[in-house]
Image (tube, rainbow, N blue to C red; front, side):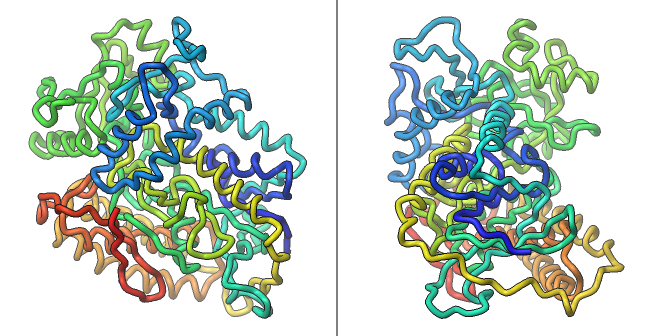
Length: 542
């Protein structure tokens, strides 16, 4: 089965749908979703979107806060590019129909929206829809996309690989470029070809490479692995953000307790009930996430506790319920009344700050291939992502990719003829347990050896295990028909290797990468860029 479009977008979160809506009036677009359209990470974002919206705030202040959080590795031009387009991005969402919370009174700029503050921000600049902003954004975008006649949505379609020149029936007349994607249709259990003039990867991050994560099961680094196999550079994969406060409960594997709760006065308490964050940082609970996560990890190891506690019981109950209704209802179902009881929390892998290296137009190193959202490295996040800058990046870069495609559409060649997917030499697996076992093993040793605190010895152990699993999975992939679980495992082991290799290259502690062997900061901040196909590592000065 072959389908032909102007643009194929792999991913149905905020980044992908932003690009789709921008392109739809002019081009035919296919949006591919691994599962249901709303099952990705966007829907789970609670806190909000950072943008300069009030008179006392400024573009420069938002830039400065982001640069500080990024610990020397942000690209200042990229940061300015995002921040300057923040308000326009918000206006775009408002025009689509996203209902952000209103404030108690109109602010001077006339917007009148309630703004909250999160860790690392010097002003209140987080727009939100209660404590379920991502859900509101995803719902509104879904409705608009489904109403667009030029957009076709394919749910339960798992991308396998980017189609490049090596997949073509004839390479004559084509520069080295992307021509679409091979896709596993889960409903019909067959591989299909999606050909396109331009391909956008918007698959989200790779936090499921770790045993504990706040992300949905689909966050397996698919886009990063696909781009790497297609020949694209990846940058700063050692910087994995661990959200400090995920709910610790047997019946809630991935439920996030938003940072906005600490922004509204919640404090962290240890096993003894005492507040501990002021001893770690003068900003206490409003310190950047990496500092808070390491402090929690330290307290848990020091006291032998399985978790710490987030306490907002000193706030008025009506205030707590009105500001955090989703968290209140969810915790109450589990027997925790957050207005009267502390919330048990632990850190969990939350955000991939590195990714496919792109420019300000979201272009990768492969012509006609774009990467946007969490799977991409733009230079915005540096060594640590500041809270609520992620949805901002999705919106800005989704528009940037679409604008570049529209500007260059007259240059685009007709979709090429890719070879059909060949399954003549493979069989159905009778050992699916191998995939399940390797999945568990990979995520466990990544958590143990490449987690919040690292050492050379732990990284070396992880690299040996990654190499063994890579060989085993490669052999398995070559002999059996593809399944969704096998494709995700294949991508996870690629991403794990990229993370470990990047971490081994960084001989310092910076931002989210903390190693006991190199606790100090080097004088010069350099990105870690890995180049595929056996080439050397390229160090770029940030």
